[in-house]
Length: 94
View (cartoon, one colour):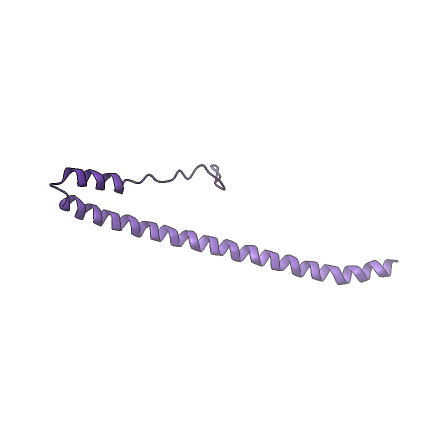
């Protein structure tokens, strides 16, 4: 029966290795896509902050004589950032 085992090994090992290689490649592509998306989100976030700063200057002038409108703007522009240390999928030790 050793011949039969060798036959199965010759058939199954290359197929299993090919499946493993494909799975590894998919994981690598997924990680790269995730890293790229995160970097893009950081850039977009910075662009949003710059836009809000410009709007803040404009609206402070615009609402200088309208205390309620200025108070509403000040409230709207202060959005708390999410706590990045807790939540689903976030590791505080990372």
